[in-house]
Length: 248
Image 1 (cartoon, one colour):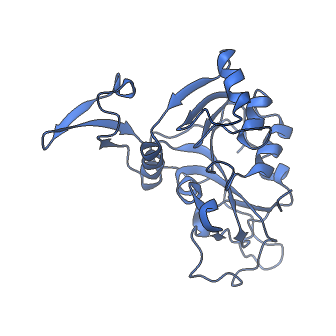
Image 2: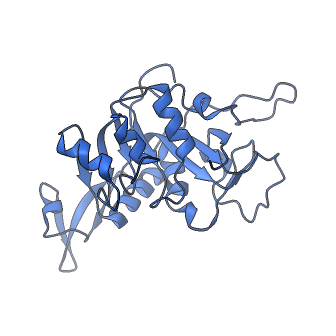
């Protein structure tokens, strides 16, 4: 990515392909460090960050993004973080311009609340199921869909409403991104990923909905064939870069 990214209306166009291995010509998506993995993410990018609460948050990639200096970000995530780490660290470092999420306030979400009170951050509040479906729609190449969620509420203001079978539905648009940052338990150098329990959460759909997907994995990157194919949730076609980032 040598130029600023542009988020498509719906459906991601995959990012740069992984380089071939030095001798065999085989695909190798492993990168040396988290900083290398995000070194070309530009200012103003739209970034999906997986995680539900503290589970499955790609903290190493977030820390690397802060170290890289990227700013003016639009962040798509379930909640706005708590404490000092993870998504909260982006707010603490004042790198977020806009956040699209379901739960901006939770126990310990002091940094989002501070930036929002300062007027430094815009908030788009989205019901959790609608957020998940908007991401999935982008992954599937669907531009929009109708849902009954939030009809008759403040969240319906300005949105198209249609009636089907005597029930009102809102038109919601797909939500693609330039970059997805996700965390898995295991991955191989082809980009195939296995998750641990609920740490899976948004990661598979985000991986498919972004133009560039970067995965940090908790265990050393495996060789192709080492992962049980019956356990692979995200196939490597959706992943562009893999980095080993053991939990700190």
